[in-house]
Image (cartoon, rainbow, N blue to C red; front, side, top):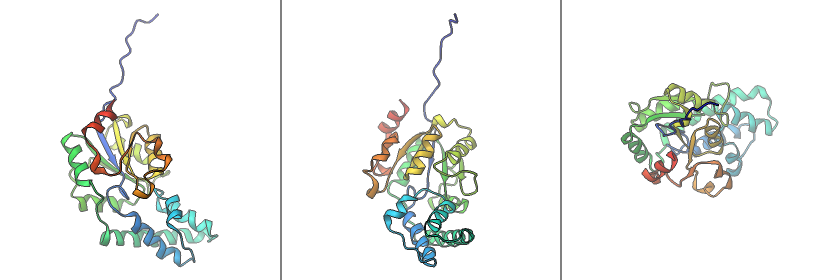
Length: 230
C-alpha cells in the first residue's frame, strides 16, 4: 500500500478575463441597431426578446441563425455579416459608453496584481478599440477573439486560448460575463464565472450555473474574491 500524502492543487485565483460587449461597454443595443439596418433589407424585423435569444453569439452564427429562420438563401449570409460588422463597429465608435463599474473593476484587480485578459465573440478590431478607449492596453496580458476560431461561445475555446496566452491554468481564472452563452463557455473551460446580466435579465433562473451573480461590476469587492477563492 502506498503511504503517499496527497497534496491539494493551489486553487487560488491569479487571473481575470473579461468579456466586452454588454459587460465593459454598452454596445449590445448598438449591435441590435446595426442588425436592424441590415435585416430590414431582407424584410426582417426582430423584437428585443428575439435578439436576447442570440446574445453572446459571434456575428457569423447570429446572422446565419436569423436569415435561415426567415428562409433567406445561404449565399447572402457572408454579405449580410460584413454589412453588420461595418455598421456595428462604426456605431460603437460613435456612440458606445462604458458600463457602470468598469474603472472600479480594473483598479481592483490591478491592486491585487492579477493578470488580465479579454475574450470575446466580437472581432479583433473591437478588442483593440476597447484597449484604447478604456486606456487599458498596458494592463492587458492577453486577448482572444472567437471571430476566426473553429468554435465560438458557448464552446470554451476562446477562454482556453486567452488563459493559454497568459500561461495560466483555467482553474486560476475568474471570468466576468453578461450573456448566457458566455457563462456556459466559461464554465466549460473550468473557470470561475461571475455574471453581470442586464437589468431586464437579472432574475432569470439560468444564471444559477454561475459562481456569483452581480447587478453591477461596481459591486465586486474583496469579500467576493475571498469567497471565490474558497
